[in-house]
Every structure is written in C-alpha cells, then in structure tokens.
Length: 592
Image 1 (cartoon, one colour):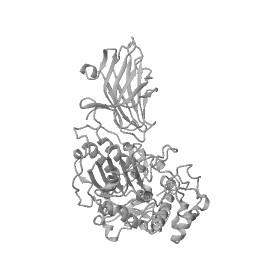
Image 2 (cartoon, one colour):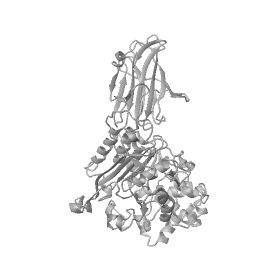
Image 3 (cartoon, rainbow, N blue to C red):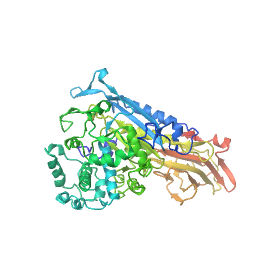
Image 4 (cartoon, rainbow, N blue to C red):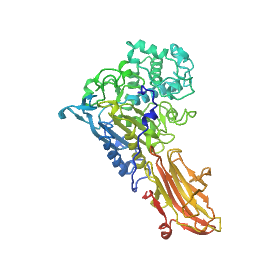
C-alpha cells in the first residue's frame, strides 16, 4: 500500500533505530545444511526445521532476534508496534527459527477519543501460531512480479515493450511510452496512489488507471506506486485470459506446494488469520469496522480482493518456501516456476540511474531501512503496510520472514520499520565470519550511533619505511557508517588518515583507499590490507569505526595486525606481549 500522503517507503522507514549488542561465535559448519526431508509433509520438499548449527548459524543472535521482537509488543514508545508476529529465519534448506509471539486477534475496535484499543474478552482473543495467516499487503507485489517474469520467459510479454501494446487504452494521458520494465521497477512516472475505491464499478476503476496522467516522464524518476502493479495485473489477465488469483494458484502456489497462500481466503481460515484494522474514516478510506479475514487495502478490497498490488494472504512457512525456491534459482523439488536467468533479473539492479532506490524486477534491493545488516547489493525483498516483510540474501543463502499485524487496531500506532531492522540485524549477525587466523578476530560491533576504536601501542617509526598489514573484513551502511585507519604523532591530540590498499584474499584487483576510509559493500569476504606509516618516534595507529543513529551494516573485523620495517617486526598481534598492548573501545574479541 502506498501512503496516501505521498511519502516514500524509505521515509516511512526512517526513525527505526537498529539494536546493538555483543555476540560470541561458536564452532559451526561452514556450509549451509544439506537438503533433508521436510517437517511439514510433501508440500514443502525444499525445507525442514532444524537447529541453528544445522543451518550454519549462530544460536545467540537468533535468540536475541526473538527477544528484540518481543520488545515491540510493549509500548515503543507509546503503543505496541504490533499486537503479535510470526518470525522465521533460515539458511540453506534449514529453518532455524520459527516463532510466534503475541496475539493474532486482540482488539475488537479502536477508541479514537482515548487513543486506546478495545480488547476482545480474553477467551475470544487468539494467540499467534506458527501457521497464522496474514494479509501480506504489498508483499503481494512479488507474486504479481513473478507471474509477469514467467510470461516474459514464455514470450507473451516483452520486458521493454510498451504497456499500451497490450492495453491500447493504457496509452492515454501521455502513457504511451511506459514499458513493462518501468512498471516492475517503479519508474513509470505514476504517482503513488489514487483512491480507486471511490469509483462504483470495476470498469470505472480500470478506466481511472487508463486515464491517469503521469507525475513525471517515463524512466526519469523513481516513485513507488501501487498503480504500477495494478497495471501489470491488467496486462497479465489480458495476455493469459486468466484472472490473477487463478494465475497465482496455477503458476506459483500449486507448483511450490504453498497451501496457505491465496487471494480471498475462505471463512474457514478466519480463526487462523491475524486481524488488521478497525477501518473507519477518517484514518481509513472506508467504514468497514474490524477487518479480519478480508484484505485491508481499500483499493484491493474494492477490486474484489484480487489486485496486483495487494490482497495475497499467506503464512511464514509458505513464504519461506517461496524464498528458498528463488534462492535455488526458481525450483522447488521437481517443480520449476522460473529459469535461473529469470530469477537473476530479480536480483539485478535496473535502477542504477536512481541510487538509493535499487530495484530488480519486482524486488527491492539493498534497502537498509528494513533489511538492516542483511542488506547487500543483491539482497532482495519487500515489505507490506500491514507489518509484513520478506528478505532474501543470496550472498549468505539466508532468508527472513517477519509477519506482524501492525495496523491492529489502527495504523497510527506504528511508525518506522524498527522490528524488521532489528530482526534482519540479528539474522545477519547469526551468519558467522571466520577469522583468518585461529579462532578469534577483532569485531567492531553493530551498535548504531556509536564509535569503536582499536588502537596499537605507540611505535617508533622515525626511521621511515614502516608498513602495517592485516586482514580486513567490512560491510557498512554506505557513506553513513565508516571505518577509518588513522595515526597520531602527538599522543592522540590530532589524527591524520592513513591511506591503505586492500586486495580480496585469494586474488583480485588492488583497491586504493587514499582517504584511509572503508565504507559500504566489500563482498563480505576477507581482504589483505597494507599501509605505509608516517615516520614518528612515538606513532599511534588506530582503527575507528563510526555509525550513525539509524541503520548499520554487518560491521568490521580486523585480524592478524602487524607492523614491520624490512625484516624487523615492530608489532605482531600474534605475540602475547604485543597483543596486550592493543586498546579496544567498543570492539570485541570474538571466536569464529
């Protein structure tokens, strides 16, 4: 659902503070667990429940993930962010965390005079369960996008073809040049949202889409818009002759064995479905009372519950099956829904002209505002207005599902995306980083609004030609969080950056860091670092890692620090006497 006031999804996400804290590595298998028999029967042949160790994950951060999520059941700061949630995290083919918290149904109404929720009697409230079904809201857009890419594979739709070549009436009001790709990447020029529910008939709603003029010329700006996926729905239904709900069932959910995913769930599902909002004007566009078992989004509801932008209901396990299928290149068991090269398009940024709004076909990419430390240039996902999120990280072969009913009892009780960020941070931390030497390495931590330093003892480099070397691993929120190598010749009164060179271990092109700074994405692999040091009789060298108040990456690691002049070693981390001289503030020494 696009915010009616025109706020971007990233602006809605601002204000979420990532949670920090320490963790200890354990000895774990390096690779994801191998495929095994499913724990929920033949409907999910690609997944099984298992331990963190079997998934190649650290158990401590997974426990903290639940603790963090439970904190948002309490006022944060004034009202709970959600009444309840279902959390699922996995790596490889192992689901290592599948945890319901809070209530699926708690409130029967919202009292706007006192800004409180009117609760059902305790015996009528329903706790969350592993298989609670949620209104996915805009996560539905992923299913529409997959269906579109399927038709691109089959040659029925052209990625760069004008939408008007399939729907001539769409070309009205200057939209004749809008392409299928621009719909999938939100670069069509559509404004965010229009109240289609105010038009009385389905045909009139469609005509409003056709008559809608663009806010910007096609391809010149990124603007997230529900109208893109509604338009794509119309194209799909035209070229296939099937309704979108039929396409979803026949092309995705049945092949993948997703038995709790559909539009318009039957009444029998209601007791196992999370309630959403007490929908009344003025905060809602329609007076519907408690929405429970029906789609929350007003436009999707007015379209009969079947819409390209919203309306799909699902549970956490089914979404994990979808995630696993995409991470496996579009296949689940013996059933393939997409070719590997088509899946690759979903993990490839088509919006390079709009930095910060990276987007594959249908999937958002590299969005720290809800992916947290899981975010990489190839991390794909989507969120939903009701409190849902799906994140897939091909780099670590991990996936995260956060399903919350955050508009229960009213949408104004929550803001930002803090629970999603916190969960993603902890799953990212759960993926171990193996030290280069031995079992330990220095770790910066992942706290927001923090500074961590690792300082070498004062060294006599006055004769010149001293060089520092170490192994370095970093992944930070680009530009906002930085790792700096710097030195002081006056006892720490002033500091100057130390330029350095990094090269990916095992080969690769040398990368120069003339400002002594590392930030952003480095591939989540170790790099060999060398740096020439200034000449001084008592030179102090330190690493300084600084984060802003919002989002963080996976952090930074330093291992195997040495300072040498020719064959003479001025400092060697592996020598106990030298290592004892290191001063760490905010860093931790961790096992891997």
